[in-house]
Image (cartoon, rainbow, N blue to C red; front, top):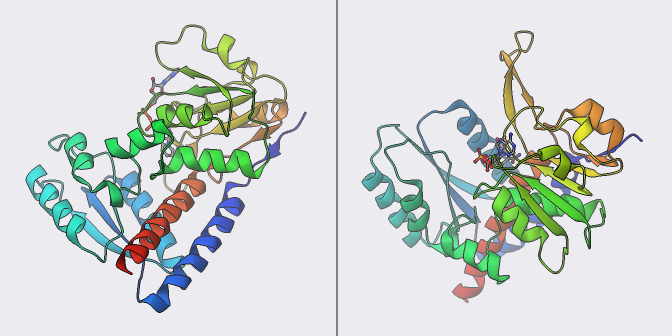
Length: 294
Ligand code: NAD
């Protein structure tokens, strides 16, 4: 078997077009959807994620307010900025790029964001709403993975979905969403404490790798005909590459593509969907603010 390569870029462009139209519909009301983007320090990967998000916002006819703060910024300074942005009626979403420097508590910072502007979906209120199946912002990467499964019409009801990783931003919410009644998968979560990973991944109809380990998933760990979704983005040293590294997923791509029925490439799979889902959360927030203004 040779897998269908899931074109996350193309699918994300459809979402971005939809968002652009919705942003255009708000313009006559004098509303420009706006995301405040806060970056503390100059971590190269974070810088490139933040730039990609801001570029996408601009292309969708939305605004961004860019806060590039020094590494030495204190937690109190960051909390006071967030307080200001919470109260600013022209700001519809607040994104704090993670990771933060170790002298700042991510938990306190995320909790300080008004849940109505928590377009990353990381606030405990957003997480609670997600778990309870109530309306609220869904975290962008897990939501993007679900959107890919839906778009490709990959059967999820009754399927065994195995998620590698239990982080708060990817593994845990993804496992939760996959078990929702409208997705209806049977979910197993694997992590660093899992014994005999391959024995479990080989049972997966849908295998989602979010471990952050380049090439962790080899072909012998994959069931013939599975859908393999690679969330991992790992920088692997490569002296022949222009930047001295190349991006690799958690999946050993070429051999696994021979065995799977669907596979996402890295880059060009889940990554673009994460940004598209962020834009969708921002437009939803702006639309809600517009209704409340009436
Ligand atoms: P994390 O380090 O917080 O969590 C990794 C998880 O994987 C942990 O729960 C750990 O228990 C598990 N794990 C690690 N090694 C394992 C192993 N050998 N066997 C089984 N489980 C193992 O990472 P994260 O923030 O969840 O991100 C995971 C990966 O996804 C990273 O590569 C990250 O760059 C990428 N990511 C991509 C996007 C995107 O938009 N494409 C978004 C977020 C994260």
